[in-house]
Image (cartoon, rainbow, N blue to C red; front, side, top):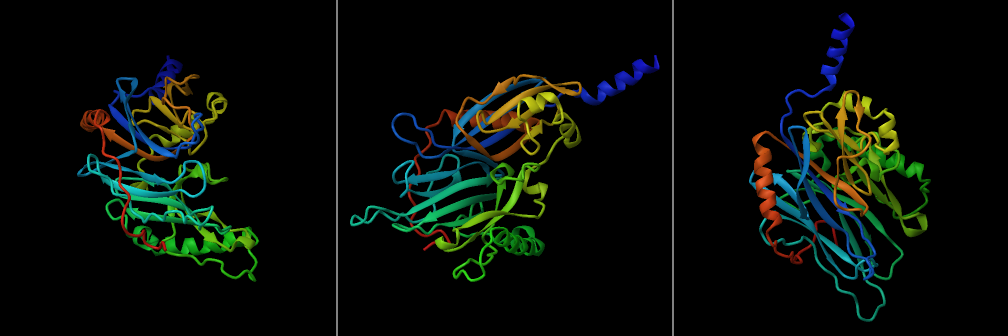
Length: 362
């Protein structure tokens, strides 16, 4: 009898209690693909996945990043101008209330007709929350071998002003960035004789998925910055800032200890489910695994084990990177579902190019 009671106690720790309803909003940066008509520019997609009574469902699939805020859902994305999949294109970020016309922030520089090359200014959204937006920039001036890496983080409704790391995370984070900058230059053997090496900047920081940086996959999100050097000194690199990101920015992690145990299982290893690239829903009866192709898979959880095959995979085989993870609980699930399904059926207005410079650009 005692052994039976022990078994029941163990099972009760693994079997979810009365399953609360929840919804997961996942935002993806979708990479280019050659579809026979040339490469298409990168894009963004948002999936709403609901969890109810032990069942999971893809409830909405929308273009762009659809971000929940106190004043309703906002639409976030980039405007791509120039040839797709080639050098010479420029990208501009926008963030507006869901049904508004997006006005992207930046200034477009058309190609010089006397040259056979034009400027490349790539802007990739790496992280978005209801309050903040992080972007990585890759810039190559026209007819130049010189390239530059930079990050910018903004309040969602103030894309014209880069946010200093001290304002968002405090003075200790700025100290950590300066230390990481010196370490990254040393690791890359940047010669002290090289003229034109960049210095740390309090506005050059961002948040990225850990899988974007080798060696950081044990975490979900990491803090990053960049250094730049002249082309003859290797151009520069992006590096991790060893500083914890508050959960208030990245969102809660449910059942962390249980998840860690599950990721040691054979099913997790066979399906390449890695620490930092998986999470459990609030009820603990489903595991969400992030990857590249498909980018989101959901597995059922049975006592002390992951079901061997996913119950749901998002409908895309394109390589993707997760840039947003947001949860809704209780009555908010139905609110999100209703609003996003309505947005899914709406023809959203096309973005327009901005007038004016992104702060810090030429």
